[in-house]
Length: 129
Image (cartoon, rainbow, N blue to C red):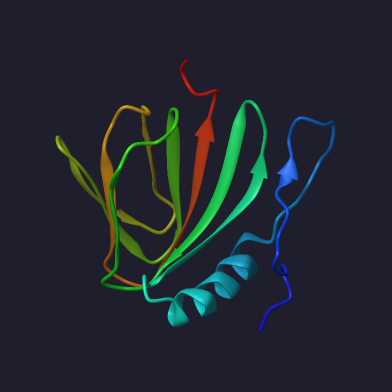
């Protein structure tokens, strides 16, 4: 198993002054190992969190889905590996490695993995309210 992170993992606090590098691909491989044994076929890790931004790494095994849900604020999904189908009521976007999609927090969306996939979710801003 990779040693790119250990559980429990404490997200980086983005409300303090710092710089932090992440070995995304190594971390994704580690998460994929977790996803293989998970009934849901997925594993995730919140890498960093602050008032203005949250960064989450997700591993999703082939033929598994993240059911329809909203985001807490505007967000971007960046596919690191594999192939996913990002679906909203208005769009069905097939994404390949290196592609991304941005959307507002009010957009209900789901993610289906056509192949073992790893992606970053970048959620920006504060929740309305």
